[in-house]
Every structure is written in structure tokens, then in C-alpha cells.
Length: 327
Figure 1 (tube, rainbow, N blue to C red):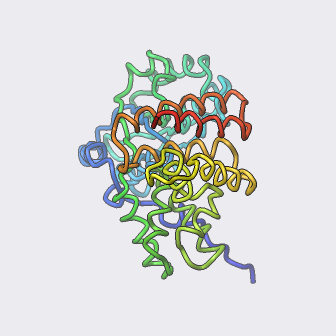
Figure 2 (figure 1 turned 180 degrees about the horizontal axis):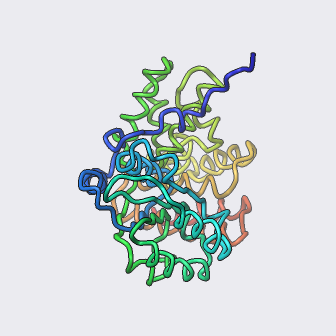
Figure 3 (figure 1 turned 30 degrees about the horizontal axis):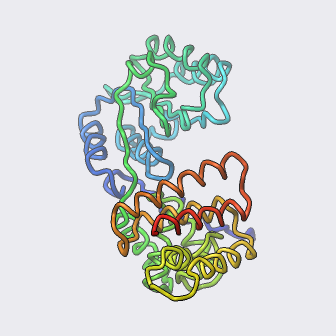
């Protein structure tokens, strides 16, 4: 007998109805009204990854099409299928296909990662959208709406999704933890939320990975799984650097020791810099002007690292500049 493989939790617990979707209440309410009225326009849905854009479109499609959902929905990931041939063949063929739908219902073409489509493919879509407007509606899901050409934007209603709040991610994580009977600690949940950065998909994946690897979800295990420096260690490094504890010892020596230990463990410069930024952003032990100056220095270092200067010396220089801010 073949073994039944368990779905990843992001698929297993993917919402099936608009009511199940967490966050972006105003946008979801607009989709509910569209589902209720049945009069769906062409849509551009834009926002950060992992916040429910594609999921909410599928939920709306199920509500609108019911049992016809399987045959009346075409989903293409535009990062793979993004050339003009796809528009001329796959999309046009589907738009021409006859489906037995109820009165006022339309077939639905979902183009995920639509901002990856070539300009030529987007131009070719203009005429297709007009010719088959009586039978087919288009949804463009993208991270950056300004990469969709203006002629397409003018033919669509634009819905913007915001990054999910910490409490919204916490709500869904607790639901999954209860259903999967997972042992966890408070700092484990805080670590999952911290590392997700408002991305629900990332949070659920990190939860499953941590549980699979350690069977217990705490802060230490989460940061091991995501291979990111622990924010408590980064905070200690920064606080030592700006001499909050007013030690007699040369303060920057301790910061450099911590940095060296992180570097020796194999953490990359980009991971250390990004964690520094996120820690400083929420560092309430210092005044706002100093915090802004620190963020400025971290941002400068981030740019240099992205340009390829990702050495230990670059990070040590960051600590030295931060130390000078507190003089």
C-alpha cells in the first residue's frame, strides 16, 4: 500500500473561504462584496509575499464559481510562463473555451507573479482582455504594481495588501499549534513572529521546520532552523557598543568579541546587518535621535554589503561608527 504523504502545513492549513483569511480586513471585505454581488472586475492584487494574495483570489473563485471552480479557473505562475507565446496560446485558448456557468458568472485567469511578465506579453494581453470580457476575468497578483503596464492598470481595479500584524500571525500559529498538538514556549512564538517579518507563509514554514527538527518550539530552536543570529545576542552586542551599562572596560572590545563569535559560527554579513536593523528599530533603551543615527549607519553598511563588500572588517567598522555616535 502506498504511503500517504502529509502536505506541508502552508497547504494543509491554507484558507478555503474568505472568512478564514487573517488580516487585511478592508481588502477582504471588498472581495466578500464582489463574491456576494457576483459582478467581478479585472483585478490587480499587490503586496508583499506570503500575506494571502493568491489564496484570497482562490477563495473568491470558489465562492463565485462553486462546483465549476475546477474547470473555470486557470492559474499561471508568470515567473515561469511569462512570454508572449503563453498569452497567444494558453491564455487565449482558455478564454475561448466553453464552460457551463451560471448567469453572470465568468471564467477566471489568475496570473501569479504578474510583475515578472515581459512587456510584450502584457501588451498582448490588452486585446485579449477586451475581446473575451463577456466570458473571462483576469486577476494579476504581484509584489510591485508599478511593473504592470499602465494600459493594464487602467483596465483593472487595484487591491493593496498590507504586511500582516504580529497578533494576526500569532492567531494563526496558535490555531495550528493546537491542531498539531505542538509543545512550545512563549519565546518560541516571539521568535517565529520576529523571523517572519509579517509573512504568514514564512511563519508557518518555520513552525513546521522547527517542530520537525526538535519536537519543541522555543526561541533557540527557531533561530537554529532559520539560521539567523539571535536578536538577544545582537542586542547585547549593540548595547555593549554604545556603553549603556557604563562599564570601565573598553566597551567596544566586548562588542567585537560577540561579532567575532557570530562570524566564526558562519553567519553571513547580510544576516547580521539585517538583524541589527530589526533590533535597533525596536530598541527602547536609547533615545530616538541616537536610534535614528544608528539606523542610518546600519543602512549604509547594508548598501555596502549588497554591493559585495561583505567582510568582517566592514561589520567591525559599523560597530566603531556606532560607538562614535555615543561620544
